[in-house]
Image (cartoon, rainbow, N blue to C red; front, side, top):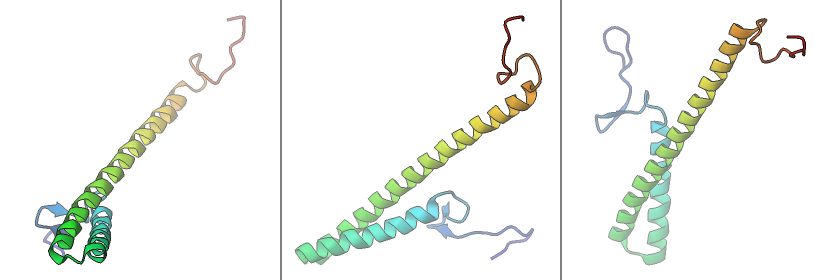
Length: 111
């Protein structure tokens, strides 16, 4: 599955969503499939109505996929913010280490 130039094409869902290169896409679709199966099966066992159970399964897929997608994206954004804060802290430590502005140095009353 390679194009010219060595780039991999990836797997696309409905021709628009490249699930191989989009963060959280694969997990969200898998969670949605499981949610669809559970919702449709439980509804069918409770009511024995096939068409309505199919509709509930589709709704379960959409809700579970979107819920999983937003949860994963939120956690990824939170992680990126934490990583950026740590990188800035390390950069500041390297810059200010050994200077008067170093917050880790104990200040004496003489200065």
